[in-house]
Length: 619
Image 1 (cartoon, rainbow, N blue to C red):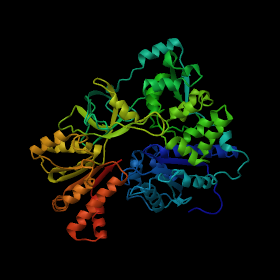
Image 2 (cartoon, rainbow, N blue to C red):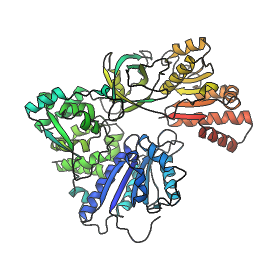
Image 3 (tube, rainbow, N blue to C red):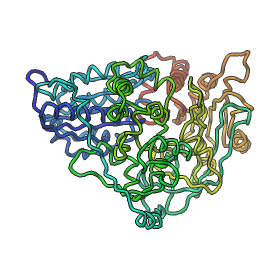
Image 4 (cartoon, rainbow, N blue to C red):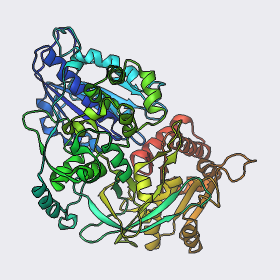
């Protein structure tokens, strides 16, 4: 750890690995706050912010100060926008002093209810030290399980971090005095140019062979069938998307979907502003040209979907901007309040919003935003003396871009080369607010009908069958929609005539949410699949039965397939307690069959996980 006299830094690089946006949000707050403080103190500091995978890692040995902010996803895995960075950082040929010039600090955001709590931040901190880097401060770990959220521990740590930059703290509040410069500039077109742009600005995604998060493919809906009973509270659907060359997918791929806001929500949003360019109706069809501002830091990552707008839909109408790009239905994070309160024209509103921004009353913020799951749209409606005064050119810094939602592909190109199937549960629940909370993507997908277009892109998954899978038995443990990737594996292996497939499937009721049951029955009749069902609510007078219970019941079979026949055992479903309970069931099976102690069994499971013989895909 660096101690003693305070260093004078010329540059701060902030790199984040973020799966749900929390680390990205914190990175923006730190960047804005540091910039404000050094400017208030008449100091100079260049601040650079980006996801880990956007950063050219070969420059890391030349850096002097880097703040890493990262989360942990799945079962101890790094976020998607950190995978390449982490893979390169783990290279065995890196010298032990390769980062000796680097001072660093690490913030981890995690959830202590998970088995591998803040695992990525801990691994990163250790790896940087092993490469000779100097730790500026102790590792900071925020716990989402805390009653008031992760910032209870993060905020005091940040005050110590900020003190590394400001040599002489001036009087007054730096955050109040400094307003960041917007990331983009906008020029509205006159009527003639607007008409011309309307006719020319139609993207042709099929004209390229490269499809990614900024150049998605537009697939066509061919099926959207409910697979749970109508009377069941949970609407689960199997979506079929038709695709054409050159778009193709591989077995085990993850398909990410870009949803859209409803027209009603867009009109509600636009109606809150006084700027005539933001009014609803025909005026919102007016188009603008968008450019990246020069000479100032951009707080928006180059991988943000706003850059799709810049590259492919420019000029764009105000209505389209809000509908396709702005995540107005997301729950506002701290950076939203950091910027929002500065535009208020009312002392009471500004004071409350500022308290939210600075975290001076975390309990009040939690009760207002997090507990009821209040959306950005609803928050902005609650502050009528602030929202109308937000300048148009700050909207993209204020409101995050819509993120693509990932789904495991539930089909195989071996039997469905021109169609991608997705299994998804429609999110619809209630809080204390009158209006139900609706998952943006799942409800938008549920409203799609045959012929509608859906913007998608693919990425490979670590949860994919190995090259020699045909020679191995496959044991699959799936609860709920966790069965999606297993459907693809089962169909693929059945097409190749591989019979050694065992599925442990868990749901609530045999007659209500045992989706895909008919498919499993047909495959079982062909002796290509064996299914063990666990219906947790089927018999209310009896103990609940889960997939881990079925595993233990079939301990001799599971042990034979996994250990004696060199098989694969893969688990998919929601995180929290589920993966840990399944792992404990596996440990009980091995301990019982091998008569080993806890350490021997745990070491064996760890080796099997390292060899990808046991894998978890949990979210």
